[in-house]
Length: 439
Ligand code: GDP
Ligand code: MG
Image: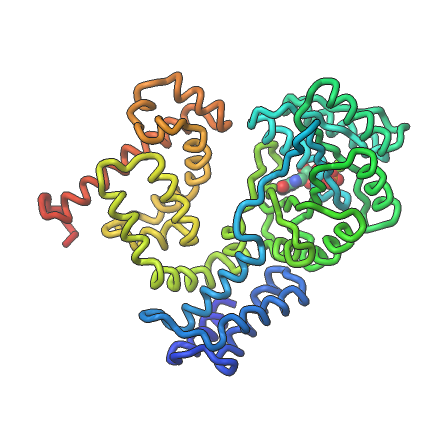
């Protein structure tokens, strides 16, 4: 794949304009890449048509090669298709927010309920989960067990009551205990069928959910488009949760969700653990669908050409002794935009001297880093010394972001290491220090 794709792009290399003629071959390869990532055929077709109409006739920016420009259009279009930014949960203004989880059997609804419960709890919401899968006693037990694990109560009425009634009584119970959010776990079926849809409609009527989230297994592949369409037509969804992204699927289903329903993916599930839930980042998914190894490097090159100015600004901040946690956070966002740490570092003066192991380590840490920094106060972000000297602050942060105190300390340590390295570097660059192998 990568070789043919790269060859296709290369054909554009000597053109000064993207035309309907020279775009053909590369777009054929893009379509193939999308299909390999399990994007459904009609979605892939529409995508290619869109990219073509945007790219053809575009003036090629100075210093940018036409193929870079085309890659950028492809990447941007992918991102746009999946939603340009984070789509947060919507909360109801009065009474508890009801979130209904729908989807086929085995896609991860019950697991997602537990994960969401934990996620909401961490945001200081009081949560109640409601078990309406009455077809298997094990399904209720499963939710009760998860509830215990995340310390969130579960409302259930055994297997004899009707699902809409359980949902209604669950909502009443939520009001009674003054819960902020009610998570209604429902029963899936192996395939789309009338019983399931009718049941969902009745539950919907009974509890008027603020969010109806369709849970989609990322491994579903091409069929995702049809699934999303049925659930959206029958029940009307407000968003989706894409699960099992820890598997080896390229995530093409993500593209189908947004394209078919117009509704955003709000979360991704990336493992069986209750903490394995993340807000959905469209850019990262675009990168995953395009393929991390091959197309992405091309996108990076395009970005490189277009973004040297922005990276220079960040570099300047990094060189200043003030580099704080806010800068560090910005930097990780920048890295996310570049697709990878190594692509980013290539643009940073001197930083391409980091070893691959160091880079991989830093990429792995980025998630933890973001979580930890998000749990800091504004003051702490600006004055890292506050944290270096206060175990109680570190403890509070660890609690807030669900990481260990050790992880928090590591992030703090990382900032100081970076500061030291940066200062060293700027000294070298200004000629104050000599360093072997450089200059
Ligand atoms: P439901 O039938 O839709 O309620 O699906 P479950 O929540 O019972 O999940 C079905 C199976 O998928 C269980 O074994 C889960 O542990 C597993 N599962 C759910 N979400 C994920 C995920 O994000 N990653 C992985 N690897 N497994 C998951
Ligand atoms: Mg279930």
